[in-house]
Length: 139
Image 1 (cartoon, helix red, strand yellow):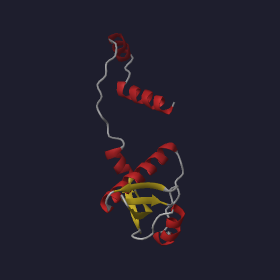
Image 2 (cartoon, helix red, strand yellow):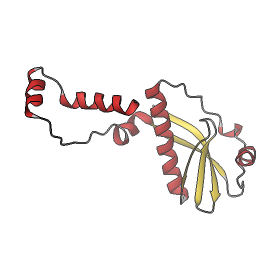
Image 3 (tube, helix red, strand yellow):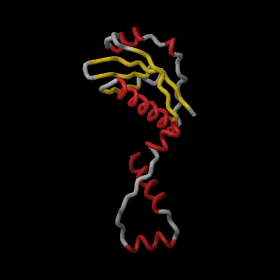
Image 4 (spheres, helix red, strand yellow):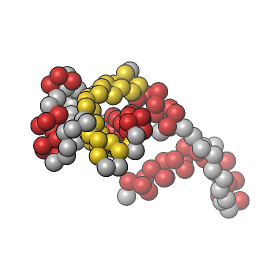
């Protein structure tokens, strides 16, 4: 499903800063306009993906006409010259398959007795390692 949110692009001395006012002022940047747009897509996908995984409610996007660059620029204390609003869209589930959920192969060593005992119990090594890593990361 396609998700579309308005983003404010502000030209600065290093390139472009990008802010999503509807998403708790989520921000990213890029050296060029094209890089900033790509980073905005990645940033939006990551935010929406993580929010979904955590069960967090995400606000509905504002209409582009309801966003005031002047108000946002003043609030952020940035220059409104060379600023613009663009709708940023991403299919989060498709993006996640390519960028967030892609599996990588890891080689590891465990004692032989542990390997034999786990195989006897038909334990899925990949699933067990993933669960253990997630548990470790959360603590």
